[in-house]
Length: 447
Image (cartoon, rainbow, N blue to C red; front, side):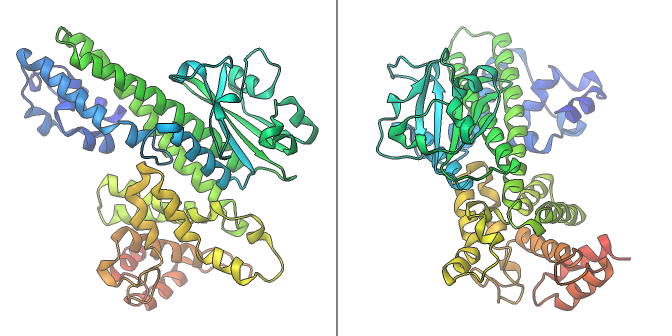
């Protein structure tokens, strides 16, 4: 929010009967947090008074807690309720799938777990393995094992072969067969709550992009948990009939600070997720980043609002998200692919949409990703949408994708110049592409 406050500092103090933070929160909160902007004209229309400060502050806190409740933040991997720790199992299963691993376990410090009696300091609360009494597995922090060290020192440990013996392994979970173990602390600047462990029985490496993804996932998870604790405290303050304006203002400051943290971490999560997906199929490693950048430049040229620009950028980054659930062998295999393997590759956009549906804060980009293979003439996939019935963000990504593919080197040809690529796009406008977007890319990159 740095820009907003620097703008406010230039205003005449007579525009306000209260502090600058009050002025900001009197505006539409959701728009402010995404746009990071407040104008002098809008601020000048804000009227405040001492007598209504407490109910006004309470309303602001209610709006904050509504916007950032559990189903909008901790829903990194979607869930309907927290009974039987379904959220942790969901996260564990998705992490296992994304890393093409054999198992994933989530351990929380016992002070973060309600209604569980245990002698362990770190208790298993989620696993990709079904049918086990999870809470019977765990660690004490004085044990000389990797999981405890990862928690205590907030360090990621990557063990292979003989080094896996440094971890505490449960044969009844099949961990004695693990040849690769990744332990990442669930820690951020707001605290440390547990450990995520990923294991593989195969002699393989987890790519650096995947290790980073697990670390970012861990940070956003712990920040979300701490946000929920603060929201619970906020509700108590709101319900207190004797609360003072100062207490409410302080609570608002704490909430906005942690919301800023989680917003930054969500962006890091999107970028890490894109890097992990892009690491499969090596000749495309930077492709999605370039498509995302081009898409955002087109959106800005067409004067779309900032929130839409960001959503289109995220969609460009994650257009190939479905790759993350596919085996690396599919992309490196030299022999002819089987019919089943071809079908898996063809179906990866649908897999990606299913994954995005489980990441609730990214739900708005699903149409952009789902329909970016449609064509202007209605001959595209997956549903044969035509013309303006295709979401505008999808049309932008489609043109940006084609442009970047044309100007990039491929094993079978040299890269085209920007002008050569644009001429091809122009010939295909109103057939494959939206002519307005082709015109925009001509203005941006043509000579």
